[in-house]
Length: 386
Image 1 (tube, rainbow, N blue to C red):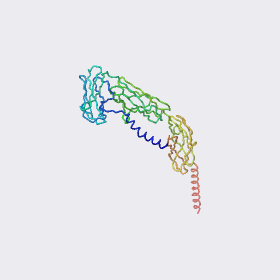
Image 2: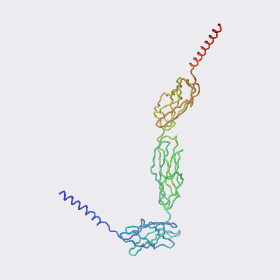
Image 3: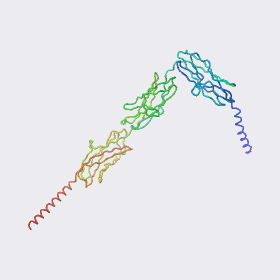
Image 4: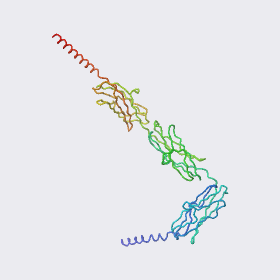
C-alpha cells in the first residue's frame, strides 16, 4: 500500500510540469509596445514616448521603422541608443528599446491626433497606434513629504529631517524652500548627501527630489515639544508639512564662590571652610552631583556635603569646601581646583588661596629668639667678670 502511494506521487510530480506547460499561453509574433498609448502634449514643447519592439519566437530579421499620420508642422523622430534610427533587429525572444520624439509647434491647434508606428520586415510586421492630445499647460502642483516628522534629543542636539519634494506638474520647476520655527531656532536646508546650503532646488516634471532640513535649538531652551512648519513654493503652487522636535532637557553646572568670589584665605596646617555655590543653569534637574577638589602637594580638600542629591533648573545649592594647607606651607598665594559632576555633565573652577603661617609658629619663633638673647647676655656677663 505504501509503495503504491509513493509511486503515485512520483507519477504526479513528473506529469504536473508537463500539464502546466501545456496550459501555458503560446505567444509568438512581433509586437510594438508602450506603457502609455495615449498621451498629452503641450504645444511648443518636445515630448518623448518610450517604446519597445518585442520579438516572440521569431527568427531575427531587419525591420524597417516608420511613423505615419504626423500632422503638418510636427516633427516625429524615432530614436535608438540616443540617435535617430530607421531600422531595428531584435533577437529571438528579446526586445529593442526605442523612443519617439515629438516636436510640436506653438501654433498647433488643440485636439487629438493619431500617429501610427510600424515595424516591417520580410516575414513579420507590427503596428502601434498612438493618440496624442494637445492640451494647455497643466498648473504647477507640489507635494512635500517628511520621512521622519518627529525627532527627539537634548538642547545641544541638531535635528535633521529628510524631506521629499515631488513635482506633479508637466514641466520643470525651481522650488523655493522655507521653514518657520520658534524664536531663536536656526534652520537650514542642504542637499540630501552634501553640506551645501540651499534656498531653492530644481525638480524635473513628474520627478521627486530629497533635501535635508537641519534645525538647531538654542542651548537655553526648556524641555518640551516644538513645531516647525516647512513650506515649498514654485509659481502658483505651494505645499506645507509639519515636523516637530521634542527636547528632553539637559543639566548644566557652574561653580563659584559666594557672591562670585574665587579667592579665600587659609592658614598653614589649619582647616578652613570656604562657601561654594553650585548652580544648575540647564533645562533639566541635576541629580547626584558629586564634588571633588585638589590642591598643591600635601593639601587636603574635602566637601560637606560631598554629594548634592538634586539641583533644579536655574537653581543653586551651597556647600562648604574644607581646605587644609600643609603645615609646612610658606606664606603666599596657591591655586586649588574644585569640580562638580552629574550624569556626564561637569564643571571645574580654580580658586586662589592666600596662605598665612600659623601664629603659634610666630610665638615660638619669638620665644626662641628671646632665649637666644638671654643666653648671649649671660655669656657676655660671665666672661666679662673674668
